[in-house]
Amino acid sequence: MPIDFKSLHKLESVPGSLSSRTRSANEIVQVLVKLRKGAKRPSFIKPRAQITSRIFSADVTFGDMQRLEADPAVESMALARRMPGIK
Image 1 (tube, rainbow, N blue to C red):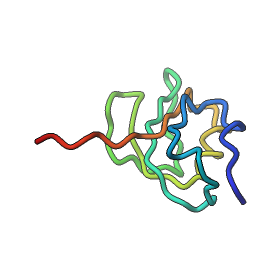
Image 2: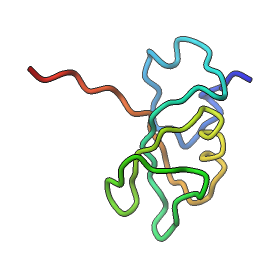
Image 3: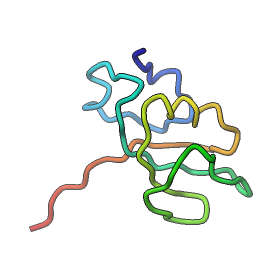
Image 4: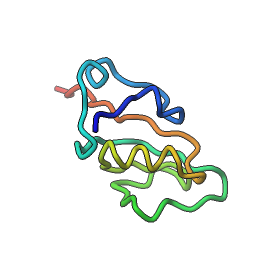
């Protein structure tokens, strides 16, 4: 089932490169997740890196993004963007 980014109200922004084509529910992307104050991380998400006590990065499927959207512990999320190489 294709994911409609407009249905994800907690998603802060969508890079043009991601919104330009349809994505499948099992495609993996990197996200940054911000939890509400005092909330615990959703058990279905394994963090890649803990950034602060409330912010972490994770590899998730687009289907998991819908679960994050519905989770009351999640304040917001953002799709990670690739940093340019440093020479």
